[in-house]
Image (cartoon, rainbow, N blue to C red; front, top):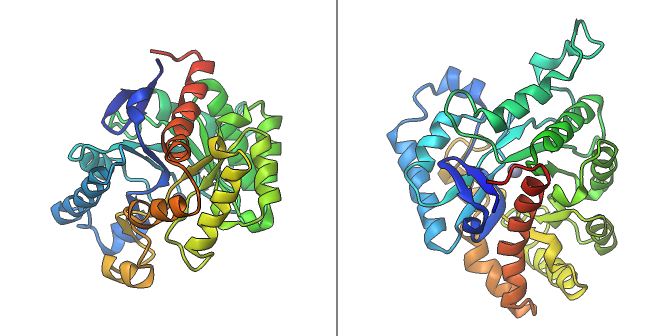
Length: 331
Ligand SMILES: [Zn+2]
């Protein structure tokens, strides 16, 4: 049985349990933190995060995938500290989040650039995070992440995406991609990753839940990828009722094994000055919204317990097991 890496070490894939496929713990601007809030990661911040993670675990979720990579303020010491104090499993990620240029350290360093390199240097960084661990913490990444937004396949976006693909092929770690569903950028993701030889069944197309375009969603799912119905509580993009109706329709059409649910929320976000401002602006955007509101609504829309188990348990487990098994990294 494959082992899956978490912030507290490797676990059996069967112990992933009920999974939220796309969350964050600390969503930061680390440069801002260093300059204007150097004491941010104190006991109050960590214990507040642990309380929120514990509440999610008490609500029946066993594992979250934290998609906080370079560009979103990944800070592994704080995450590892919080993860060590909760029973919730946290799978951490490597990769880079950009809608345009590559991260600055790679602007002039790479094949054919001012500082030439035979191989794309990002690949080595990502594989190192998976094989050796992140920033000396010993915590190994269990998910790869990149992004493509409304601007489409910008050169930096494509470079990161191809590097993520090569790290997947070398390690058997699955991939999650932030996409802009209204611009149908999931199509670019599937094309580029397939060109790199990635098995599209090892890919989560993120933020598909922001779309009600069933034809588009079926097109992506028919190529094998898992659709992230993963922004429950972001109610300004699309309502909860629309999100629920779209899932119910996809389930009715036989796609329950291609859907995974989540909120894309966090314990702390620099997008607001304080957590109270966050809660006031987005009252449903918290870890418990799916448990409290979405699952009952899905039941009323005709989604069965068996279908819920497929979306929360079987599909995430299949994603991790398939990637790990194919790379020959079984325990
Ligand atoms: Zn996210």
